[in-house]
Every structure is written in structure tokens, then in C-alpha cells.
Image (cartoon, rainbow over all chains, first blue to last red; front, side, top):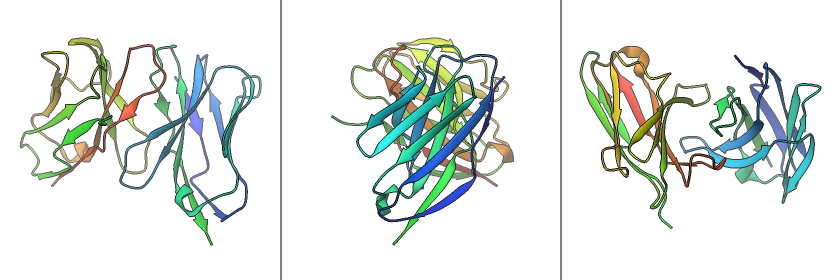
Length: 110
Length: 114
């Protein structure tokens, strides 16, 4: 099985940069997802990393290191609307079905 | 483009009662998923359909949960009888094909079992 660990909650200031870490233990996986979920809303897809390294998409970037069992989501130029839960998830079998962690609740304050 | 539609948005029932949820995926999306999200946790896959066939239902508690997608479009998820631990948000998602990594989620149905 998989074990995914993320901080439960983080706070950051508007305009700043925040890094949300995700560590995992698994026997193998095809890729790693990041999803954003605002309170009371559906998750929305942010990224899917297969290869090691950093993938940038606008203000959001996602990094994967398979050798270290580690990923992070980097959010730049934080905005109030970025306050949400950020879910790290593994794709264990290559079927693109995410196995989610508990998520990190990010609070952005002025 | 219309998103994934779900109804009802909220439902409160007593334990041992039955409940059904409905999902209409994005037009043209062949693959449909039902997830259960308990408060404070990430979503957990219950069942995956490809058109009207079941691809994976290994985590569906089949003694009380059932799901169907008769015409390969809309889907219903039923719980009978409900237990207190079924209180959760039930999310429906769809993707264009089964090997697409981008799933589109609906707003969910929040179920409270008392």
C-alpha cells in the first residue's frame, strides 16, 4: 500500500511564496498528483509528475524526487483565493486514479 | 462547457434508511468515477466505470453500496441501509478516456446520517 504524509495546516502571507511538502512510502507508482480543493467544493487538478524534477505552470510549480520519496508544491505570489486544501496523491498502477493523502489546509492572510 | 452535475447537493437521513445520488458527467466523457470523502481526509475511490461497464469496484462496500451506469452516461450510487460512518461527501468525477490523468470533479453530495 501507500503511505502519504503532508502537514495538516500551513499559513502564509499574501504575496509570499509557500512550499507544501509531501512525503510518501510506496512500493512503486506511476506518477504523483497535486489537487486543490476549496472548502465545500470539488477538487481541481493542478499537476501530474512522472519524472523527477520541477514542472512549472504559472504561479504553481510541482517537484518530484523518487529517490527521496518526496514531492512539493510551490505557490508563488500568493493570493487570498489560494486559501484551500492541497491534496497530494499517488497513481499507483498507472491507471491515473489518485490515491489521496489527507491534504494540507493553506490559510493565506493579508 | 458544462461541468459534472450532481444531485442532491445535501441529504440528511437516519441510519438504516436508503439514499441515492445522481451524477451526469461532462458530455463525451467515457470514464466515470465515484469517490467518498470523509471529513478531514482525501477522497477515496469507490467505483470506476468505462462507458457502462465496471472497471474497478474493489473498494465499494458491496453489502450496502451499489452503483450503475446503464446507458453509459448518467450514473447513480445507492446506499442501503446507511450507517453512521457513511456520513461523507460523495464526489462524482469524469474523464475523457480511462487513461487521461485529468479528472473533472462534480460539486459533490454531502450526506449526513443521524
